[in-house]
Amino acid sequence: MATRRWSRVMTMLVPFALMCLAGAASAVEVSDLKGFEDLFGRYAPGGDCRRTPQVVVDVAGFTFEVDGRQEVVTNPEYAAAYGPHDYSGISQWFFPFRIKDGYPVLMTFNHDEKKGVLAIDPQDQGYPGGPKLSARHQALVSGSPYARCK
Image (cartoon, rainbow, N blue to C red):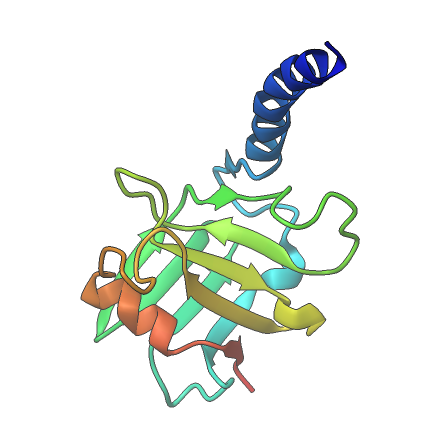
């Protein structure tokens, strides 16, 4: 009898726990980067502005410079709750692009708790066995880690 009750409790708790986790990882669209001034600047692979691709961060959003072309993203999603529930470090996460089934890449500013370092990693594409990243997104991932230009 006690086993049946425990099973019923677990049946109810597991979906609730999964919903809480899903909510913690959600992101919110932002219309500008006011309040993120400490992230502003030009980022290049290793901080060498002679190299590409490059990412410019300013109040309007992100400008990605890949293969001589620019793409401006003015409505990225800020993943305020991406880290662990008790996270108190300096990293900040953004999803600059949306695709039908999620986000192709994740941007982590102050990556590994290092101020001025930006990592761009595959998120919902580009992982082993998964859908491939577009050439543009792959170029951004391949250029990582980035640092503010010196």
